[in-house]
Length: 138
Image 1 (cartoon, one colour):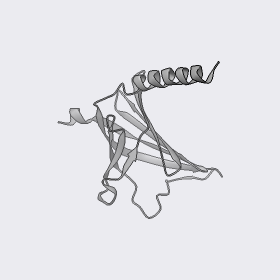
Image 2: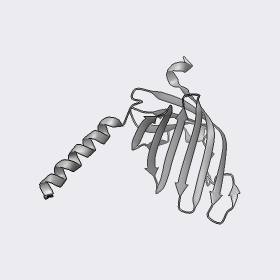
Image 3: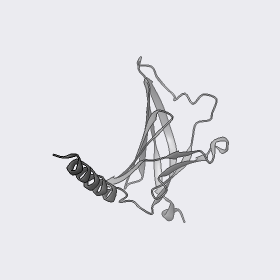
Image 4: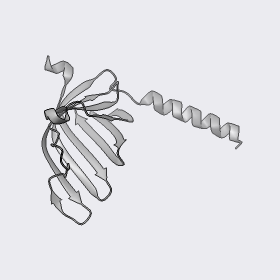
């Protein structure tokens, strides 16, 4: 295969993947955090270490903007994490991104369950809560 052929195949694949992505376009969700746990590489289990910052309790997911924006607590309101991927499959909306060297994934089910994972160097956070389409909140 020539370099030109490889470039064309890459462009076609990239275009196909890009076209398949936001099946959830135009939708936003309000999410609440009910519980969170962290597991370190040494097996320590406990609450996530957020340093001096308060733990997020509410956030908004925007599929079009590909953003997760913290709503509460007030000390964290407005913090934004950019998301690289938005996908819908089998009744699940999946959002993923990278921030400060950590991977972030959020899954929202049609029933309104929300699961968020943060994977960093030697630690995994699992966060559980609920999600409501913003349009359903009015």
